[in-house]
Image 1: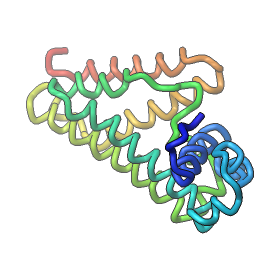
Image 2: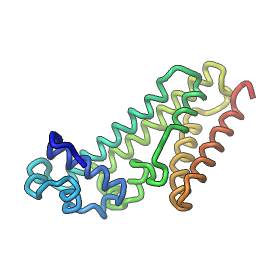
Image 3: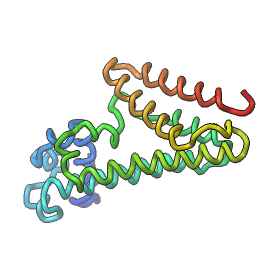
Image 4: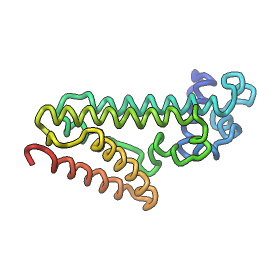
Length: 194
């Protein structure tokens, strides 16, 4: 699974990221992390103070990667609607759920302010960044000037997160695709050319 040159700390972080996405925080034991990483208990506690410290490193890395992927779509050339469309249509592992949004369903993780912080900050960043793109579209005359960027951005994030939930419940990507298509249709209805 990991190359010989991968450090133990790196294997522990990556294993924790995978397990958090698959199982959640409460169901991810230190033993499961160590087994997946091919690391002993001593190695884990040499690099990290414990499960919360390791989980924070894993969640922070996942959040950074999620932001980078989103920013890649938001900062490309094109209209606001084209960039939002690229973001919503980019490839995702839909049936696994959102690696950040899914963590909000874990009560133990959400009860820990340090672990909740990168989740909360990432979703707030996403709403803020989408609001900037929507506002740009309104300023440039592409989108209806009466469209509120903040509420529109919140709705887009809610549709995306809800799409994951619907897809997982149905064990099919179809509800996710329908939610995204619906959101894009609503947004297209607010373009100045509509």
